[in-house]
Image (tube, rainbow, N blue to C red):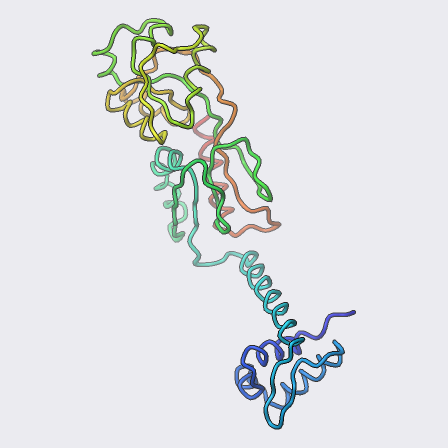
Length: 295
């Protein structure tokens, strides 16, 4: 069966929602007679009565109410799709959703550069825990993972490369730290989601498990990182995040040994043929900025 005319569908949707042909006519700026004719054309096309005529009144039938549900669903999808592929979605804020660690330690210090390049673009930022699922609606997300999110496109931003770092103040007050095995005499900082990362690094350094080391466990990586800056212990820093503090002397790296954690931070965005301009602009900016820094 071919689809009915769109004008007839529009007339039916208004009449069904309002259950009044005159009100539907006023809403669509046509005459009640025009609404009645469109409804009759639609009923003939479908072969069912959508309204029962009782004197001067009309009442939607059971079939009409069922069909109205399908029409409303189709109109809602059409509205969502139109909004999604509109050329630039002018005036819409860029919603960045994702890792608190990445956003606080990498993105926020560099966000003024994005605003300088796109001064009219409003930005909305939501930080979340690593285990939270993607929301139903967002522009871009930045999450730690292996690059696989259903129905999404991804770009690798930074692989998670780990190395021990600590503050100069801690180094002065702590026992000697000349070889990796000396870590057993120190306080190691870690997160509840990465309890095996120190063992992964120590094994790559050839010293086996650091079971005798004192450890403090935090619920988030940025808290562990802040604790290291405050001189509380040694944390596994992440390449791409600690370089600025190393240059400034806020942190030192006692050993050259690094280990790949097997995952990384990814830029995630819906898999669409045409992305809004704000998403295209942010993607180009962040990829260019990372490429420049890594070079």
